Amino acid sequence: MRNDLDVLGREDTGDGERRGAGARSRVLWEAPEAALRKVADEIEAYWEIALAPYWARIQKVLEADVFHRARQVAEHGSARVLSELHETVRWDDGTLRLVRRHCALSRDQAGSGLLLIPSVFAWLRVLTRSVHLDPPQLAYPARGIGTLWEPRTAAAADAVAAVLGRSRTLLLTELDTPSSTTRLATHCGLSAAGVSQHLIALRNAGLVTAHRSGRSVLYARTAVADQLLDP
Image (cartoon, rainbow, N blue to C red):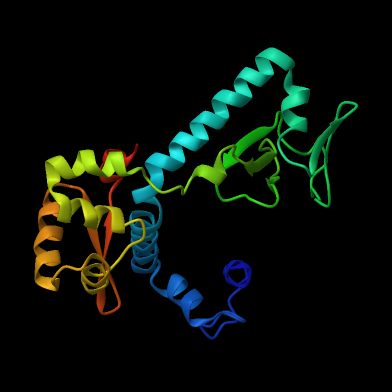
């Protein structure tokens, strides 16, 4: 990614080529509207498959963390909150210190304040961002990440099965990760034709989405279905 971004900032050599530009970079220069539309479509597809089905449970973890930190600030002050974000972060005599992290900007070059961002993607370390005029940002592991992917209780699945039926509920629970019809049929002990019919019904009800990946079609659970299966 860094090489592509560097290329976009270089001057034209005069022969229509950008020095060091790869094929993907040249497409952005030669047909920006079509290329950017494709990039946007890929980002949307990634969201639908990788994040949207799990966003409801992720959001709960993030909101719980924000609530906890806000209460800690009210009860004990911001110094305690900053010292408890991560083992590599500490508040020391009016200075926020990050172990083995380097900020390219000085305090007077960055914007005012500090933006704290709970994240389920920052795990062993914190992530930082410092850009001129913007407030410094610090992304830290949200509390409760360890419980994020715990299996759902049988009671929750049983309650949904009473409405949707056992087979369709089984398919929804199997869609913790996007899957093809063939894989679902194998794991659930159902025929491929039966799985296909159930998926069509679930898709029409807004409980699953379908996305083409090469020669396969991957089905993913929607946020609505994820909320139904939450204990």
